[in-house]
Length: 71
Image 1 (cartoon, one colour):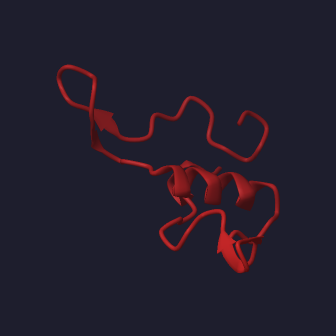
Image 2 (cartoon, rainbow, N blue to C red; image 1 turned 90 degrees about the vertical axis):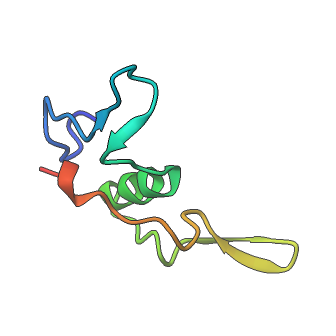
């Protein structure tokens, strides 16, 4: 994500002592998709695809742009 208006050398959140589970700053895949689409200039809330006669959002209804990592 370098060069895409993301803070350089930024660590988002932390892990537990073992390093296998996020302790703070948890980011879901929906949040990651929303953030990448935002950086590409695409409104993730309006982007839909059609499947089985229904419109679905790539970021579902939980995705939020992670503004903390943006420069």
